Image (cartoon, rainbow, N blue to C red; front, side, top):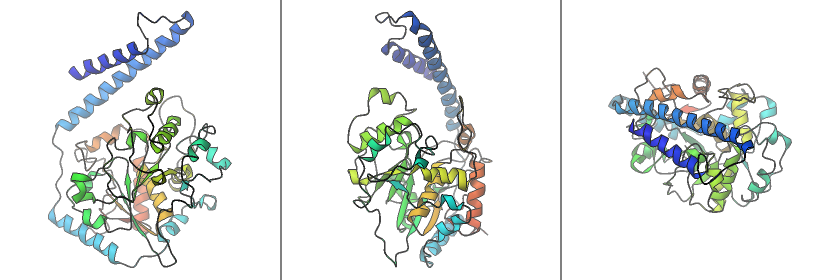
Length: 389
C-alpha cells in the first residue's frame, strides 16, 4: 500500500509539473478532451506498474531454489576446456546457419558506418527489424559514427580462427565459476546490463562487445576492458536521439526522457570509435529467416511475439564476426518458476511468464537443434546438455 501511494503521488507530481489539473495553467477548451485522455492513460499505466511491481515483489520475497552440485560444475569445466582446446574450424557457425537461411538473407555487414549506403531494405520494416519512419534521423546518426576503415574490430588474417562466446544473463551461470574459462575466448559478447565486478568469478572480466538498447544498458558503466565496444540497437525512434547523445557526450532532452520505460544511462564513457550501430537486418534475419516468425504488422495494442531476444540476435551477429560460436548462460526453464532468472539478481523464472514480446519456447527449439547439429556449442547446458550423463 505504501508503494501504491508513492507511485500515485509521483504520478500526481508529474501531471502537476506538466500543467494537468494545475490552477496556474489553463488550456483552451479544444484541449480538454485530449488532456483528460492523457491523464487517464497516465493513471492506467501507473496502476499497471503498481500491480506488476507488487506481483514481482511478492515473488522475490521468497528464497529462490538454486544449488550447483560439485559434480555438475566439474562436468561444465571439462566440457568448456575441451571446446577451448579442440581444433578451430573457420566459418563453421555461419556455414551451419546458411542451411537454415534463404539465399537472399546471406548478409555480411553486421554494423552500419559513417560511409554506409542506405539501401531501401533498411527502411522496409519498423524498428527493431529496420528503420522505417526514421529516414530523417538515421543519416544524421551515421555521421556521428566512425568509418569502417577507421575502426577495425579485430585483427584478422588468412590463418586466423576466432572463437566467440555470447554470455547470456541466465541464472544457470550462478556458482559455476566459469570466469577464467570465459576470459580465454577470443571474443566475448555480453548482453544489456549483465554485470561483472563481484560476479566475475562466474562470468569473467573481459568484454569485447556489449550489445544493448537504452533501457537495457548499465546505468553505471562497469566494463574496464580497454578494448570494449558498445553495440547500440534501435528499438524505437527516441533510441536514435539517445545513441547520438551518448556518442557526443551530451544530455538527453527532457522530452526524449518521457519515452523511455525505465532509467537509461546519462553517459557511456567510451571514445567515439568504440561505438557501433547494429545493422537492423541482423534482427530481421534472426526473426524472419532463422526463427521463421511472421513479419511485423501494425498493432494498436500488445505484441505479436515476433521480436527475438537480444541473446539469439547476438548469436546471429557473432556468426558474422567469429568462426566458432558458443553460448553460456542461455536457457529459460519455465517449468521451474522458483529458480533464478538472472545470475545477478533475485528475479524468479516465473517473471518470464509475464513478458509478451518474445517467443522463448520457439527460440529454445531452434537453439537446441543448432546445438545438436554442432553449429553452436552450449557451454553451460541450459538449452541442451550434450555433456551430461
